[in-house]
Amino acid sequence: MKQRWLALLLALTLLLTLPALADSDWACPNCGQTGNTGNFCSNCGTARPNAAWTCPSCGLTGNAGNFCSNCGAPRPDANSNSDETQTPAYTVNENLEQIPGETQRVKVIVAHVDASSFIANKADANRWRPENAVDGNETTCWQFSAKKGLKNKSWIDLTFNSPQTVDEIWFKNGFWAVNDKGKDQYVLNARPKEMYVTLYTASGGSETMNLTLKDESRNGWQRFSLGHHENVRSMRVAVYSIYKGSAFPNDVCLSEVLPVQIAPAEIARPAQAEQTAVVYESRPDITGCNLLMKLATRSGPGTEYAEPGTFFGSNWQNQTVKVLRKSFDGSVWWVQVDFRNGGKNSYRVWTGAKRVDVDLNRVQEDRRICDCDIYPTSDTWYGPGGNYAKAKIKITRYAVGTIYQIDNGYVDVLYWYEDDGYDGNHRIWLPQSAVFNLYYGDYSGE
Image (cartoon, rainbow, N blue to C red; front, side):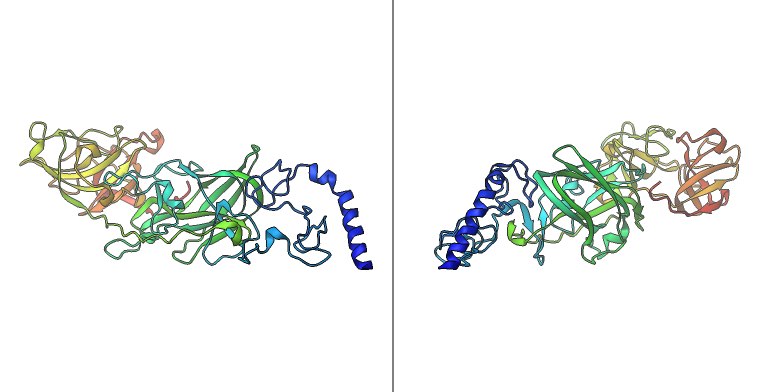
């Protein structure tokens, strides 16, 4: 009896010290919601830290833990209900999702995704969209081109439904798919290397951290601690440098990115079902592509390049071309086409993709092989060999350039005179003997 009176006296003392706390605002330790006044978070339902409760068994008030300090009965919202069915210790936060195999980490659900760019696809416009990086399917990916450079200009933004706590970020780097020929897309395409991750809070604050991803495929998540950040509204992942792909060095791929909160799995909704793996078509050279209009051409992928001419003006409906490469100039796709101009010379030049009936996804991207120095020469062509049309362009003095193709003893070179600066409109075919001092250095991130 004496112990019971002591417990009641202790409870009364606690009640006298708690009124001010009950009336004050508090921040939820789970989701970061501020301005709460009751015993449960108005956003996710998490119990207020140290909130007092009344024992349903003995009537003792002022309890602060998960068990009654008088009789040991469990806190009603943390144990079982009247029909003895077990209930979670916390109200489920619908903005969090369980991660299979994890008991103390949960996924923060992304409500909206945006990105600086993605590679468009004529046959399937959604194939490389940024949403693929948060769809829970490692065989899809966000894919963008780094041909124009990076320098923090290539990014993906993740926005949440409401402010959440974020502790970690996980990645599945590169493209985790295998094409219909059995080739691993991870090594064929480029992968992010250095990244800047910026967290933005609902109050307007931000913090940026630098991360470096490993170049490894199918070895589980790459996990990074960001520190404990509450009230996070959105985050940006900006790619600063890359690992080059063996076939498509500038097609940068990211299969999955996952914002993570350190919290019991019970507070999150169940994980989504695992999605079916996607198998992508391989991308060979395309022959027999029909023209959609007369063939206006350029020596390189853009309107700034020289014009070899316009072909098949009145009879384009009956013509086909071979498509070898593609390149995105920032607004439209260009394709490199190889064709014979009637009974005359052949050409390997560029035209807008809108002029050719071709699935761009099956065409490889134009890529740098190496840089070089160039001897003065008057012999230039619109293709790799003497059966191609001869160009009127002459290289009158020593020049420098970038080689994009090597074929039949000829090189496809973008060149300029170093002392005049780069003007970007001279791309032509030269005999391989006209170039020297080949440099194969990696310019990723520059």
